[in-house]
Image (cartoon, rainbow, N blue to C red; front, top):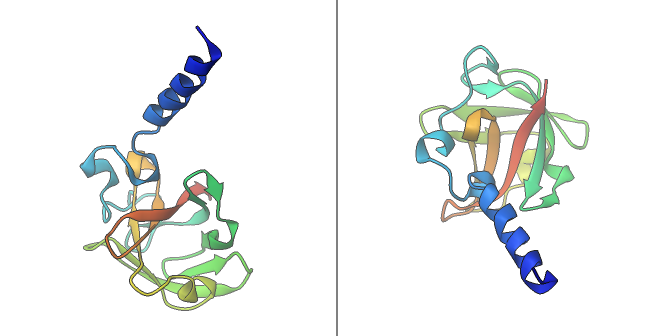
Length: 139
């Protein structure tokens, strides 16, 4: 097969294998905000404690990285602690203080869900489209 055809085909195959990633595809039940984590691995009302690493498509967004330290506290990428709240009914995650409290433009919001069982904080725009996401990576 010619290289001019093979490269786009490989790209398409890679794209199709990411169904459910980056807010596209996947089943609504597994990726809907508000599904939270399991109670055995979550703190408080569903946020899993540990390190979250953030991405926007294929680019790392390290300034958004954070560590959930309790049912209401987190540490931002700047090393300072802050407070958050989570509404399991709506799936909304709100950073009340600390670095991430001022990181979201007007009209944007955080949604917490577990696509494919992986705890994820999803930064969404006013149209509720995911623009960045932060996935749990370790305790």
